[in-house]
Length: 429
Image (cartoon, rainbow, N blue to C red; front, top):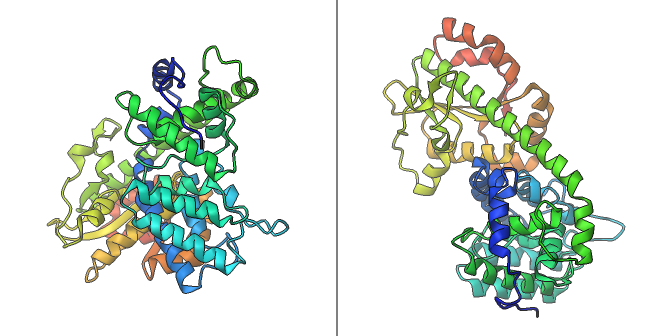
């Protein structure tokens, strides 16, 4: 087992951290502290892991990654982009290799389910380490430490995510040659990351995603370790220009998406107010404004009291736009705007709302670009979504129709039923 001491860690680590944080396009700024969707993903992924455990325990998990609740988990993770883009690949069922061996081998599937269940309910570091060691000893073919990325979203202060770039960055920074697919290498890497992060926590975070992001940037060639001529780093740096170009294009696309998201929120706020409803906007978006109009002045910051638990209320409070009755006591419409983010997370928030409003009629809408229509319909029609959301009726509103008809709806609409003029056919999921 590899271990490290402060003397082993690159002397310039603090300088590297500052360089990493000052880069406006680093994962630290665009994902770790700069993405509202990051925090939304944690509950969705935790819920999906619970669904995976339940499916395995009841024998309904299936014999393929596609269509399984595990796919929903990895879909929500890969929606985080950048260092999570390839997170699903290790879990794809490869028939010729028969890996990962959790789809056709029931015993291995149950071991994986027990591992996820134990980690989901763990409260101490020792429990997680013991479960990872047990899974490593089980020797399930094709099921390597990529599973640690799932655990990161369950225990972000104890488990760092894992992929090729992170391992390459670790080897370049620490001068090691740890192997990509080895659990023992991962556990050694985790120990070194925890120690190094503890020493520099004031510069980063207790959340290990920040340090893992630094390793990812080193492994991608965006941050270089001065004075290290390691062959691994040299190879990485040769790819840096290409990686930088892709990152810049992604950052520009994300910025454009965030602006479009805000614009659509503004349209829904205006329409709701014109129809005489009170409007609530996601609490993490209340600071926004569009066309010179501040959301804080156009919306209420209070949700109705309907007896839901605090964690459920926190989740509902992240729904993009809610229309409330004039007296503010009832929620009548819920809107999730999915410019480029996970439909899965939005559906889960709507389900939480629907389960908290058993006696109230509420209308649920996915608002997305015209180009995503087929994707929205396909996702809502998936068996796992139908099982997840029960009988919550969800309709789809294309950006184009909302843009085109918003003024007319504001002028001639009398209540929420005017939305049926622009909503696509009812999908019950």
